[in-house]
Image 1 (cartoon, rainbow, N blue to C red):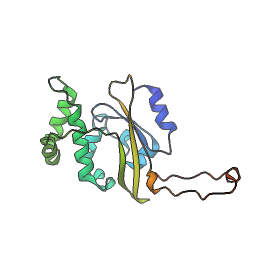
Image 2: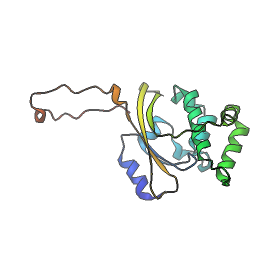
Image 3: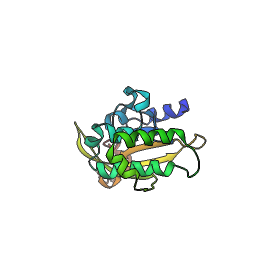
Image 4: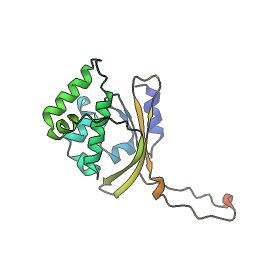
Length: 179
């Protein structure tokens, strides 16, 4: 991961953001991302993977209110990363480990679903804020061997609208976005 990419996601705070490797490795996460999901930086390097976290860490089932759908999507994204006929020892090791340790992962992996994690809205639960609907956008990073940046923001459909004023310049109060 390029250091400038890590600096970029930290600059996005308070918007939660993270950088994924091609097999959902968490290569970087900002402060707000840690608050929303989990502190991946505190995990052993081999555990810093969204798929591992999703199926092996009980916190994922608390954070994602729609865990079954999100978990199925994670598996479908991993499945899409597998190139037929192209050996990928890192992906094979991850899939073998998760298949052995999680019957739910094994069941979903055998379904051969494919997906791209591009954009949408997810429901989250946070101990302090309760239930939240948060939009996400995923962007492929050119020249980075399959790395993506995932950025979360308040669900646009649920953001409160600012009241109209006769003179827009008279109101300098910034709008807030809950993350």
